[in-house]
Length: 241
Image 1 (tube, helix red, strand yellow):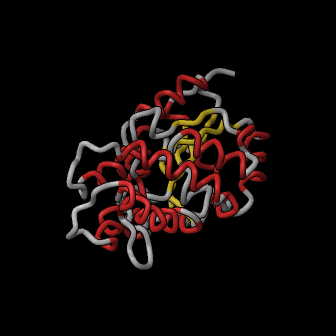
Image 2 (cartoon, rainbow, N blue to C red):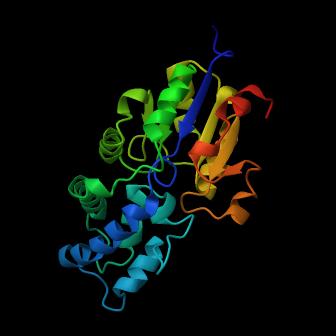
């Protein structure tokens, strides 16, 4: 079987495989007091402004913000702008904080439906599976182990190892690793940046289980489903997109 005959799917993580609101908004809110204790923050910037700058509103996380789609670097840069002295190492703080929060609050890592059963079905259909996320590698691997799907995933691209979405580096690396052309790869995600990233592959399919709004996502894809479990994967992989 040559590469043209094979099929593959890249999945985003948070909001696509994992319930976004079960962990990240609370994690971000809990981070602010620790950030203030460790760094010299400008007096005129209160907690609410910091949260808004990061993308956390009163009732939801806003798409295309540092928390919704950014890497640890993006989050650290937002925090750095609130400091009196911008030379301080906010990136180390962000990476260590979110990793420890993930470990300590692992029960809040909740799958969106039965991800393991879905991945098992896809693997039995000889569909290769990869993950691309803005999160860091250690936190991502821990989350996949919590979902018990780590052994079903062949490729993991994270924000600390690859250029962030929507850049195409991660999908190029996946294509090379599994020896399947990009035009045979689907990408599934929940945000505008995810759908912008999907322009590099066969097709982008959006889900409404994360931060993206249907009206906005429709500007980037005509394939939108409530969750990953309603998607007719084989149909999209067989048809000409």
